[in-house]
Image (cartoon, rainbow, N blue to C red; front, top):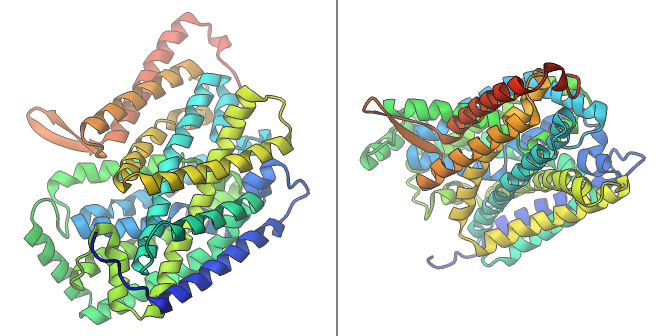
Length: 501
């Protein structure tokens, strides 16, 4: 582990100031855009479905581009080079998907008062097992994602010179309290500050760091030389063998991104279909930001930074090249960048548990006030579980589970999306498809050492691709075959369930 670093008091003071600022905002958020039914799950879990274009842009962006993104993307670029940039085409591909699919999903949810994707699935297919499968997948895929936000916060707290678990625990106790009080309004309000701070940090870094290092030509030259020395698959450009895995990772990640409960929560909280369409047009501004963030991985090589782990790349770069006050500002931006998504993730998981387990199986007559109370308690349990996980379990397990979580949540795509556009599928076929995709995808990923890419041998040649996308293909093929078989034994008039939106 090495000796703990000395505390950087200037940076820590700036960090505490901004953390205190967003804490106050979090508690004040309960009075912001307050509706008449504060105890209702719509009010607590979806902000009353009143968020307009501006608020939704910050909320979805703050929820999608997390603290772990700021830490992990440069870390991956630092470790493997160009391959780490797969996040860029992925975030470009995702917005046409949002533009085409999410307004229709919002319309269905808004019309019937649905709070979760599993609500929509049950209303469409009238299948409790399929509803439970979608809800359970959402919760399981979200838990390690919350834990990784803690990893992002833990990295910057350590870089400030603080050791032990107390600072991280205190930060998440504060988060838990104001999320319990204000619900989705808290991360929505804090997202304004978080995103503004992240933009400032990144724009300053991509201008000043190359100036300190001799320009971008020097940055790329030094990074290229470092990758050449490492050898293997690293480099400033993709190797031919990386084209297919790079492309399938980008496509599979794009299809999965808005199946997560936290991203769908931001969609359901919007005040209209046009709000979602406008956001699909404006949100690519974050993709530009992400590309700039990724370049920090190259800059670390040019600055001769050799972190203990790749996740320490960005904090080490800022500690080396910036004055303490700006380092504190940057670290607080990253830490606050953990609070927004972690809050929305816990709310999304709590909404799923409340609507699709508690109401469905435990107390079908639960009142709207009772729903909100259960969701508040579950959101606390989810955050506490993630905190315990990250304190007592090695970080590698959180990484492995998050990779599996992406594969799992991708298998919900047919059930959530197909029913919006087609009247052909029924619940049993989609459930069996989900089981097939989840089973074969998990088996392949685990047999590969929980790696996201699997290599197939075809005609003696290796072809690597994203395991989750292959599993989705299996999922869809199985669902189609089962549906064809079911259609042979069932009159066509018996399969209409709910009308299309």
